[in-house]
Image (cartoon, rainbow, N blue to C red; front, top):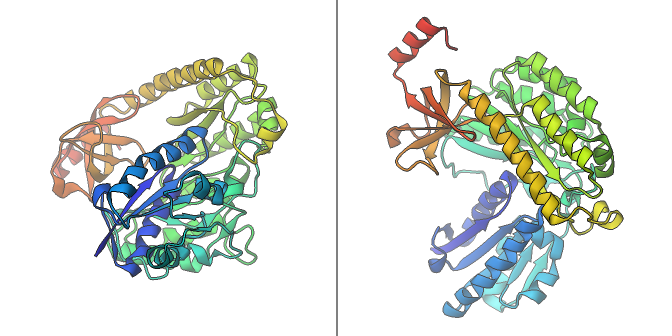
Length: 454
C-alpha cells in the first residue's frame, strides 16, 4: 500500500475536494497518511481567494523541494484554485513539481499519477467541464469519518463580483442532480452520519441553470424527509438568491439548523456597487429582518472586506454600523487584495494603503469581538444540544462540539462521546466559543423544570 499526504488550504469546499482526492486515489492503492516524510504522493490542494493563501502555496512548494531530493520517486502535485489560475506556469516556476490539476479535474488524477510514475511525464489538466459528472465519485462513498459529512451539491458562480476570482477558478454554476444528492445523503446516513453540510460557491442558486431541476428550498425539503438525519447546514449563500421560500424553510424544516452565513462584504452602497454585489444595504437588512421574523433564534455570520478600492472613511464607518445593527454571531474579515482576472484588479487602483487597511481590519475585529462576547454571555446557564466532533483544538484535554446555531462548545468528557449528541449547560463564554458541563438526562429535566430553559 502506497501513502498519500494532502495539505489543504481554504474553505470547506476544498476540504471536501481533498476527501474526493483520497477517494479516487484508492483505485491505485494509495492510503492517507498525516506524515509527509513517509508519503509516496504529496498533494497541495490550494485556495486563491486571498493573496495570502496563494503566497502559502509557493512557500510550501519551496519546502517540498528537499523532500523530492531526499526520496527518489516521490510525486508532488498541486490542485485547486491556484492550480486552475496558474496552470502550466506552476510547472515552469517549480521544477520539482510533477503535476497540476484544476478544480474540476480530480477524476483525472489516477491517469496523471500513473503517467508520472511510469513515464516521468509532467502534466497539467485544468479544463472546465460542461456537466456535473465530475462531481460524482467514481465509486460510491464508503469512507465516513465521524457523524458529520460534507456534500457538494453545486460548483461555480455566475455572479462575477468585481473582487472575486471564483468564477475564473471554479467556473460557471453547475448543479448535481437532486436524485444523486439525495442518494448520497441516504447512503451517508445509513453509515451513521447525522449532520450534512451542503456545499457550493453560491449554494442557494442551486438548480437555476438546470431546467426541470428542484429549487434549493425544494431540495432542502426533500433532504429534511430523510429519517435518522438530525441536522442540515449549507454554505455559502449570496444575498441576492435568499428567496422568500428559502427564508420560510428555516421556520418549517425541523432538521435545518438555525444558522446562516450571508456575506454582506460592505455596509456602504457605493462600495457594494463597485463590488458588483447586485443588492444594497437596505435590501440586505430587509432580508435579515425577514429571517429573524421567521426564525427569531437564527444565528448569522458574514464576510467583510475592508480597504476595497476607493473606500472612504465614511464608507468604512457604514460597515461598522451594519455590524452593530445586525449583531452577527461571527464574522470573517479580510483586507482587500487584488486578484488576477477580476474586474476590480483591472478597473480600480488599489488606493487604500496597507496601514489603513490594517487599522480598519483591527477596528472591525475589535467591534465583532465585543458583539460576539456579549451574545455568548447571554447563553450562560442555557442547556444546549451539542454534536461532539472530537478533541478541542484550543483546550487541551477537553472535547468540542457545535450547537445547532454553529457555536463552538468546549467541555470535559469521555472520548466515547465523540459522534454523539449530548446536552450541556453553558458555564462560561469567550468571543469565539462557549464553555460547558455535560449533563445527565436527569440534570436536563431538572434544569428545564426549574428555570424554563429550552
